[in-house]
Length: 170
Ligand SMILES: [Zn+2]
Image 1 (cartoon, helix red, strand yellow):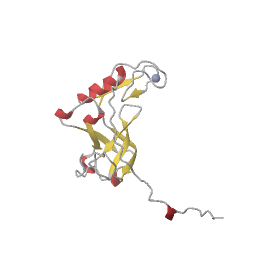
Image 2 (cartoon, helix red, strand yellow):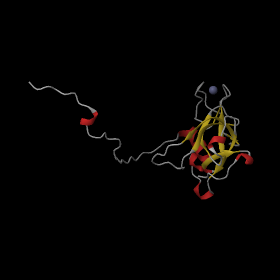
Image 3 (cartoon, rainbow, N blue to C red):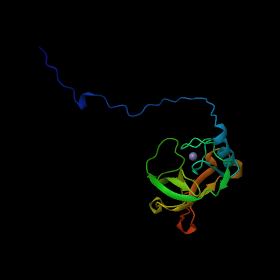
Image 4 (cartoon, rainbow, N blue to C red):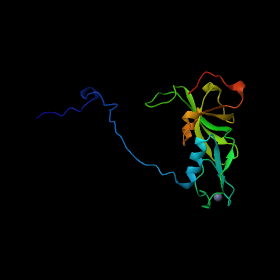
């Protein structure tokens, strides 16, 4: 009678940690009436927000209907695009497709005049100098690279020039 020896880690081949599985998907994104307003604004260097006539919530980006009371939002109006850091993280790990070399900051930003938050990078500042409440402003891409997407805003930076390090650009 043979004995069954329990396997150990030394009996197993090295674990597979990554695989390469490229794929391609073609799709059509339909922004809808509400999101189209925001996207067209991005192509024109404009932050277009909308207010709910029912509860007063101001959205950027704005959908067509209020998420809280389902009313159709009022016509768009322009906001400056400035805001304050609400929360943030420092990205230290590299990953495929990354646009900025780590370390850098990704933050939720309370845009002035709105009731929701926008996620974006905060650059031109040492990550350790970013703080909750820091006032930030958008940095737009060049005119020939403007498009109907949030990519038209390259990143946010401290509104106070004295807080900028000027060294980390994207
Ligand atoms: Zn509402």
